Length: 353
Image (cartoon, rainbow, N blue to C red; front, side, top):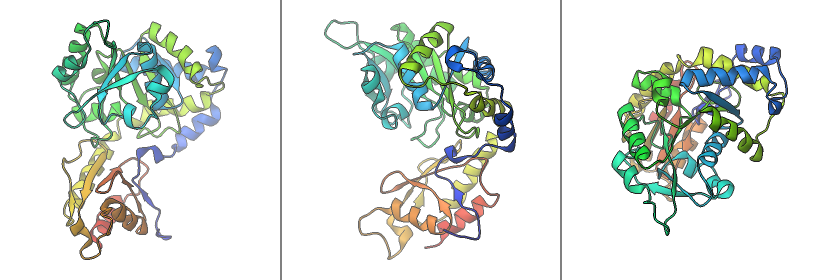
């Protein structure tokens, strides 16, 4: 890695560091015991989040994964199924927690870029027969991580919600990057969240807070979610020091996410000109997923066929950090904490072999 220039860290938008305003808010945060509901900063954050997304209440949790898993548990009973996309975060990156913690089984759908149709969802919901597992929940993801930050349109969400409700099944949204989705769709985050029984979103990704996520829902659901959070080990004490930067994130950072989308588009346009690099779909938000072929290496292609790994190692040698998803796919994620010359440096590194 270059010692002369700061690294360009495109591995994830989770690598963002808190802004000076966030650090100041942390130092000055008014705190109390959150397990007793006595942390005023946490309470203000929860009220702000619920209001922004159009819900009655919200719950501050340490991570997005915990927020999702609390939601799955509160909406279901052990032995039920959760309808979800085959590439969803709750299936790939949450450690089989739905089974381990809540006794749930995924009903997996193979979809187009992460988003099921209303017909697929309706077909996946089990009929109410004594020898079949009940369908306890439908879970969607918007934006969709493994689909390259793809965005589900509002109409499709509404159709799925309607299909689920005909069968009395609640619908949860993994909205880790819901504000990215809102900007891409040209609507508010409240519009994206409308019609869901619960929504989780993260403060610690493109919004730049050091930790934390919010689960938003009705008063009754959040009351039970608070119990489940404690059961899962997520009861926190004087955690206003983490809620304070979350408030700054909601007040100051949501609108600037459009800049990350522009950076992602510029990166994709530049990298797509490099031989052997192909984008199945150009990015709409801040996540780029592309393939690296043998031709990028010329006569120096890795014998094991791990082209993505070889490409990522090459980038690292030039001060650029990215992730290999498999032997051919590479992921990059843009965020506010990147150097100004990110696009030029990354494209230049991609052109070298």
